[in-house]
Image (tube, rainbow, N blue to C red; front, top):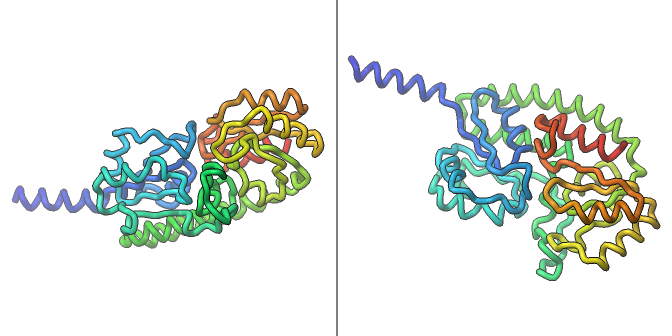
Amino acid sequence: MKKIILITLLTISSLFASLKVDTTYTTSGAVAKAIGGDLITVTVLGSSKYDPHFIVPKPSLLSKLRRADLLVINGGGLEVGWLPPLIKSANNAKIQPGAKGFLDMSHFIKMIDKPASVSRSFGDIHAQGNPHYATDPHQVLVMAKVIAKKLAQIDPSHASTYEKNLEHFLKKWNAFLTDYDTKMATCKTKKVVQYHELYNYFLRRYHIENIGNIEPLPGIAPSSKHTIELINLMKQNGVQKILQDVYHEKKTAKFIALKSGAKVVVIPHDVGAVKGTEKLEDFYNTISTRICK
């Protein structure tokens, strides 16, 4: 009798156990939670306070990966500097590349800025294209659909719930985009400079011109010569905004602002990167407000 009770309890607990979903960054984590709801437990591996290219591969991340049922990565080479050794060491067959529980989101995104050739002389470029697609709020629709499909594959017993959650989320997000796009229509004539090419998807979506970057090449620190050239270029083009992210040094942007008359605005690159952006809507609203006003 005790064995029967124990087996029954184990069966019931397994039925109600939440699916463990790891995401590499916070925006994909927020989307996954919106689709999975109470059926999943989301763990974000990388902090939005730090450079997404160089997350510290702490041993604590191994325990999270070992128990994961699904791993959602940004892809496009963004995690190449820290994630592969962790996946290998975790020894979790469910989330190995190519397994059912491994999802590379970049495979479903139309990547931009693909280089014609790859060379170290071009800086730290990504051969697959610019991986920072999550700054474009329209990409959330793609992310939601892909995650919903993957959750249904891994957990078919709850497929109908994921589909309903997706339907509800898409309706809500399309309404958000309608208002958002209308608001962003006033920003078409804006010209900006950014530190790293973090916001290209957003800028291209809303026809905002990026005049130049504080980095002379991706991942390369700005030189005095490049900085002076950028200041002159900004003056010639009437650039009023310098888009500063949270993890690069801020001294250079402040100097450029002083010499050019432009204003430095700190823009989040991921959900939670700056205070008040812990929700998806707040993340994108903060980007638009700080660029457009």
